Image (cartoon, each protein chain N blue to C red):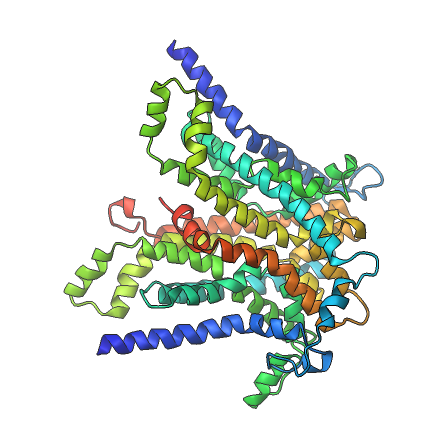
Length: 276
Length: 300
């Protein structure tokens, strides 16, 4: 009886808490169809849904539609995800399986860089890309992902690779496989689940990496969805309904991926992220 | 034969880590060194950097009230948002670490805000919700609380950003959850046999066993909070009266709005020193409260 009541309490607590957490998002969906005067109400559904919030918001800039901005962002994401996943796997194999001089030293450096505030490197990086004439292009946004995809992901994959039994490597070695062969035929296929996690996080984090986008992209033609939204917010007379509609669309790719790969998400990080 | 073998694996090791190593040298190590040099110069991108010695630092510490303000604002932000986030994520992780029906739904609902939280879209949402005629004030009105213009009032603007930051506690929570799942169930069982209650179990088992995870979350939480940018930039634009002028935003504007690259580099180095000091303090203090199982069961 006491157990049952305890469970009931847990349910009430969790349900209430989930509701508070998610309410702004539910409200957001309704708000994207509201006219301005109704936006101050906590109610969800508008009296008359303004579907034109979407059609007008989609074309707010006059020059380009959001289709253009989505295209830009997805193009950038393609580079980021491919670069990040491939190079993180390669580097993690080196750290996770191979012996080489100064390995411990380099691995500590890798972990240290996770704690380095990005502000320290951003000015010289900007100067560098500026000298190379690459400011206002996607190169400064995409290129860094091709250098191992970020310390956090390498670390995550190293942990994952260390969990794979070495017998598999040994067996392949006896069969005459080189370290490269072992990586391609044994390790790479086995770490695919972890690579999916890396890909998902790379996608979502670079979608939200507003700082880099605002820094490096200046012409509207190249704007990402995030920058287009900022342009929207900076207008003199903000059409809030339209802005909220477009904001809501802008998070859809991440949301879609989240629900498609949900199992991966919470459990994926739980099993790969923090073992040992 | 053996030696040749060794050389080959050495080489292979470096071949595999070369993408990271190259990136580290080009995009991290070299920029750090250059930023250190630039912090002693005046540089506007147009002309070559001019050596001015300690002038940037002297100016920052003696002449720049914005520096003091933004540092204060950032410290306040870190001081409140880090513990709040840790507290909430631990509580929620413990609630989620039970076998209940529908747990997936709860977990999704609670994690969801963190999925989208850092984006500019949510910043826009937040700006609307917390404006004077936003719906938050309407709800508060039901409880007889007179709403204020949360974002344009310097007394409450920072709190709004802290709240937004706390709302996205999902990643921290997931890490806690993973930590909770690794605590051996036997510990709780034998504690029950010894007659320990819930509170006792929490303080004697859960907290010590979770302390490494807590430490990890604390260190990264502090470092991350010091770099908060998007919310301040979009929701409040640093205002009103600089009440949310976060350090990262200050640095960004010095560098990329006023093109004072040398000055901004000095600011970056001050940030690095502050973050490094806090991290060192954290590591030093961790000896007294972080418990590692491999120590043979004693917290050092």
